[in-house]
Length: 365
Image 1 (tube, rainbow, N blue to C red):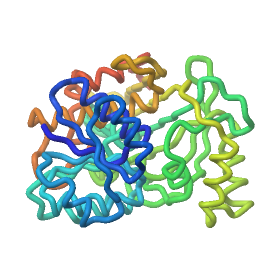
Image 2 (cartoon, rainbow, N blue to C red):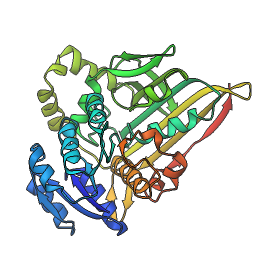
Image 3 (spheres, rainbow, N blue to C red):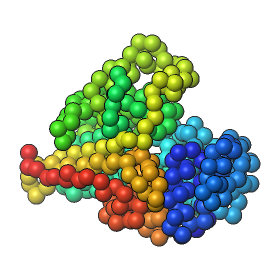
Image 4 (cartoon, helix red, strand yellow):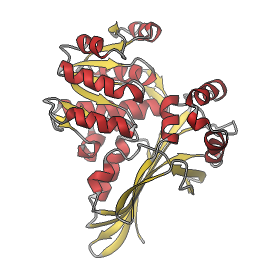
């Protein structure tokens, strides 16, 4: 399968490496940043320089490919999806942006090829797992989805290090969040809904952030009383972000906030990804709850040291592409994450990266 990876940053680099190692994919990386391309070329991965903001140039560059993986920031997603449609190639991305996903869905309406956005961790894997759990109930009361990409060793006041896209991080902290409350889909505000919980003896907080639900509100509409997604952080993080975004009004000056974050908050490859899903409802006349958890740590994959967020984001994308190649997913139109079988995902060679530490449990409540 001939795959164009548009975006040669950290995650695009990781996806290219993972796919190339299998021997089943002919991978070419595209970017306008020659320095980023040089890093991939040094590892033997073919590269081509193209301005990803130029839809016509991109469309011409990807002619003849079977699939395009978009690993660029969310604000370029619609442009790249349009180029993919024009070139007649299947499209996959990692966007968490609700508006971009809606626009891509419209692009996919009459398409002969597949368009599958949100193929990362959250949205992505979290929706696959939550949907599987929800389908085990005859009546669904609550679905709670919690995900955190956290430093293993927090040292600053934010108790946070940069582990992925600053653009994506700020976007999910600023945009309205979908949820279902009292069986009705509604919008809730980011940074609200603060809650605290502990897992393995570690204290965490969680609060509303945008995009993590993917299309699950629509898929489970009319079947669930309550459904929400929250990002997990160490206690105290949310209050400081609220101070920056609301009190200092940086939500309306994102460029300044990005500059501050990049200058002041160091990146780390020593991270942990926490996945925590609870679903409660009726089964066999009894009110029960199922819990699905994973902790994935940084480790060496394919001979290369990778952070947990690299492993989970790139691993999810590669697993979904693998399943698509094996024709276990629809081959045209808009494809939702929850159309992926959790069993197939976890059995996949890339999905096995999600094994991590498991604390699955079921309890009567």
